[in-house]
Image (tube, rainbow, N blue to C red; front, side):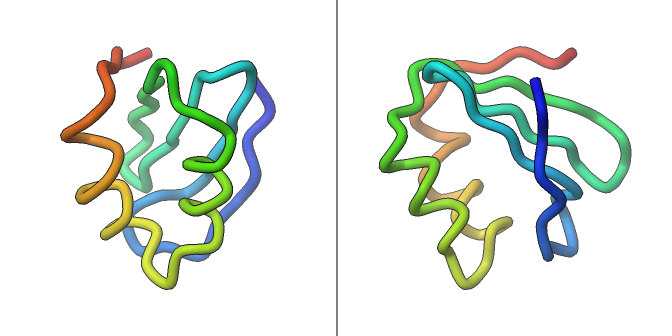
Length: 67
């Protein structure tokens, strides 16, 4: 999946395709979150703090796996 670099102290890049959100953290780990709607991805990309949005809206609500 193609990821875009983001301005965040905790997340290096973000990708989204067909409901799968992929996050690359600054420590090098990569996680995929499943069944994430496009508006949620858009809100993540528009958030003032991407890391805070992930902690509040993504991690508690979507199942994931580490790659």
